[in-house]
Length: 98
Image 1 (cartoon, rainbow, N blue to C red):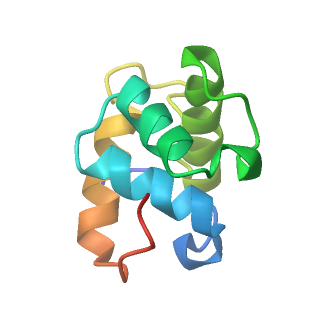
Image 2: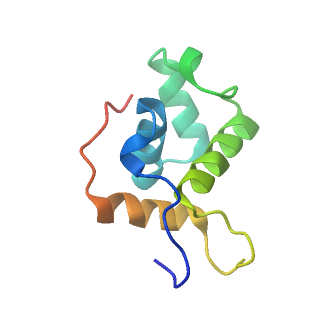
């Protein structure tokens, strides 16, 4: 992780849907592909936002905020990449991915 960055919240405290979203993001899925996987598996009623492009972007931003990875003052770092690295570095137990 870049110097000065720290996790804001214990990743294990994320909801199941947040962890599933994080897992898909870490596997390299696009926002559109993540939305389609949630919709096709009937999980869209549980998500905090509509599953359109903007809704997924908001959900990603909230995940970055919870993990302490929002860009903030450092535009040189990509929070999506940092979230993926953090996911694999933590070796979290796999959530039920849609």
